[in-house]
Each structure stands twice: as structure tokens, then as C-alpha cells.
Length: 236
Ligand code: CA
Image 1 (cartoon, rainbow, N blue to C red):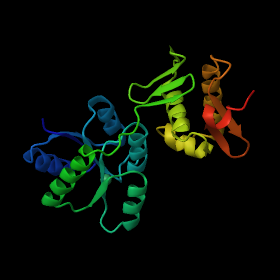
Image 2: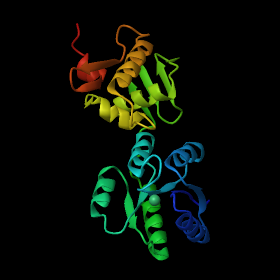
Image 3: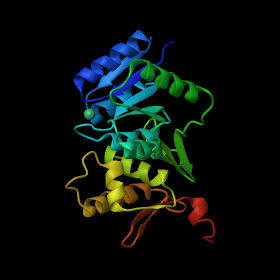
């Protein structure tokens, strides 16, 4: 079965060219012109590799990459502008597998895509699909949260805040970092909104009182999810 590749690129000509080259090489191709529609396609179709333009008109490529990494180890190849060395470093730091510099050569494109797919098949550890800590289980793929097996109904925003917190367990995330992780459009959203959502999330998670999950407020820094083994193991 041929691999499916998702192209997220706003330039229509380039998108068409990439699609054409990849289809001729035998791949199944999906494409999207914006970050948001790209993420939607990803959730729905679970492609085997993502070609991601860094400069997108809505959600920028960095945010898209972060979202992808929060839920998947899918190989991501970044499309970067010519000469932007810092983009490459930043991209690889942020979890991209490789990058291609525009203008993109056909044979280089195929070679990089093949290599990234091959690396992924030969035993790179997959990111966990779930996070478990005491009674809490977060399923990143199915977007479900349970406490002692009972489903906790969260809004998509509350879910994304929780995912960001548990992905960074035992580390403090500032309101700004939480905004970047969880909000589609963080500009114009203030820290009091973050506080409000965290408070609501806490209330919903407080269902199991004894050893329930703990989101602490670290005064003037932000919020931290503490795993039970890190924070609560000596509580009597
Ligand atoms: Ca672009």
C-alpha cells in the first residue's frame, strides 16, 4: 500500500507541483492551503508524512508543528524559504524530521520523503498515544480523558490545555506558553482567560478527590501538572 502524504502549503502553484511530483512517484496525496485545514486533514486522515510550509497565512507552521507533535510522531518535513538558516535549526529543535529549501528540486523532494518514511518504519519509538498518571488517562488520539475509567467531558480548548500540561508534566508553563499550545488564535487573548480555563479544568478533574490529578499554580510563573510519582508520593 502506498504511503499517504499531506502537503500543507499556501502557495497554490507550489502545492500543485508537489502534488504532481509525489503522485507520479506513487504516493497518495492530500493537500491543504492553511494550517487549520491542514490540522483537520491530519486528524481525519492520519497521513504517513507531512510536508509543512513554515510561512502559512493563518496558524504559522511552527504552531502546526507543535500541534502535530503533541499527538503524533508522524514524520514532518519542513518547507523553508531559501537562506533562512535559523528556520532549519528551529524546525529540527521543534521536532521536524528534515527540511527542504525552496525552490524545491523534484529528485531531492522524493529522496527526502523516502528517507523520512524509511526512518520512521525502522523502529523510531512512537510517541505514546496515551498519558496515564494514577486515575487519570488522556488519550491523545481519541481526544478522551478518563478518571478511574469514567469519562471527563472537556471542551476542545480544555482538552488542549490539559494535553499541553501533561506533555510538560512537572514543568511550569507560563500563560503565554499555554496560549501558544492551546489557542488557535492567541493574539488578543489575555492571561486571565488562561486562568479561567485552568480553573474550569481543575473543577472537572476534581471528581476523584483523593489522589486526583494536580494542576498547581506557580505564583507569577504559570501552571504545572505534577505527576503523582513526582509530587504526591509522600503525602501520608
Ligand atoms: Ca508560504
